[in-house]
Image (cartoon, rainbow, N blue to C red; front, side, top):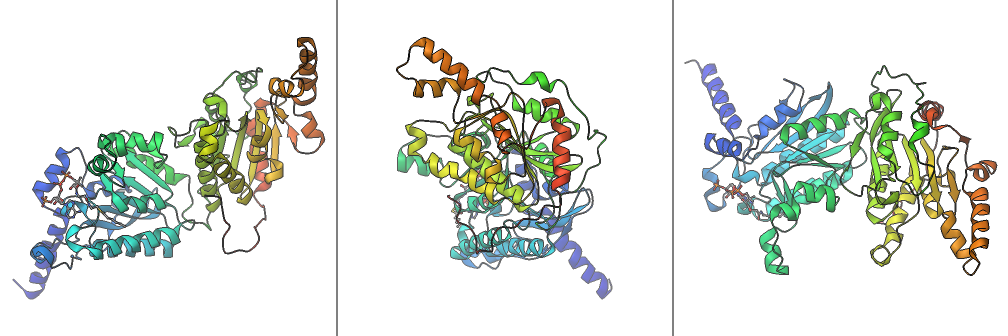
Length: 511
Ligand code: HXC
């Protein structure tokens, strides 16, 4: 064999070892557990044949506990760059077959290198987590590695989209890298996130809880609000990641890609005139309105299981990405509460970071009253929506579909808090509160007859959008059937919007 061939042979051997990770047995175990391997995940996520691997031959440097006898090419991370729908992304996947995907100093260095490259090239980065946490044998070196990853997560925030996909365990401080990213995907029954696992919980608080209940996909998608998307299985989850990216620009100085559509920009929909019940106490599903208005009736909802009284997500109007924020009258009457405020504010800020215009559909009876809400800080949390809408410099269009009462009218992207165009339907009610509530306060001691008269007067004066339109607080009253065309016209008008906030180090959003 010539010298060149021997060198090539070394390459082939190292390459094969890297491809096998922790070995065939561990790969079989991974499959038996119903999970894909790190490489299979990358192949599923990326456009076929586009993966370029970085640092395939690096090995850990640990000598404790005889670790120097077990060095695996690539260690516990498979990472690099590739394409999704032809656009550059960086990505890395924890390899559970190598020491349970635990984070060594070497793994952290690989991740930080990719995070730095993604930031420099202005491309999204996707992390696929499946890990036993800090590599125990490496002690503080591993912890330091987490710190370096968190640092990159934080300085990249608002510059490039960062996405985390939890595909196995993610415990302890390891949860904080996903938590610092923009979106977290989880897989039903396969992924778990918690700061402390069930055993520690039992010791400390004596609570008996399964890992699914403590930190499973449904828990974090519906209760804690930590996760944004839930997939049935890994393949579906990774397809959802691809779809999310289609709505996003690669970085904060680009616009999202434009998707050609056959959906007519002047399409009207007369069904919408009948969708909203005149009775302000009757529910309807705001998602029906959203679906009817956006391109190809397609709405990609974010956090669909959490705080369902507010709906947020992405769609396209005239081919361009928009972020939608909408009260949901079909759930808790669309009231604003702590969770709804947090959900909306974070979504608004994401859209503003990445130049995605905001469309707000408003039908809100107000903020939720009660000790639970007050004592848990509805004032502090509700302020986040105001702050996020005011601070956002992207085009902002609001449509009042029915109720716009009290403080909730102001905070849901009103003219006063900076929306560019505010539409209202003819049946909209813009008032300090609903008619019955107002009469009960003003005419507490009055007779039934006087109350009925006051109710009629209040309804005539306030339960409509005309007073606000007279004052210029509403730019235009439109028929529901015109919603699509009016929004697209407004977005077109606002696309040259010039607005920036005063220079500052950063604001102080109420957290
Ligand atoms: C080194 C680890 C490891 C770790 C797992 N392994 N976790 N090696 N460091 N943290 C190894 C196991 O020894 C085993 O090796 C292999 O990975 C697979 O693990 P199993 O336990 O056989 O798998 P499974 O039954 O699926 O259980 C997975 C698991 C469990 C739930 C993740 O392994 C586990 O509880 N690991 C410890 C988790 C933990 O406490 N991590 C530290 C958290 S503190 P062999 O050779 O037998 O196959 C932390 C601090 C971060 O992360 C702070 C950041 C600021």
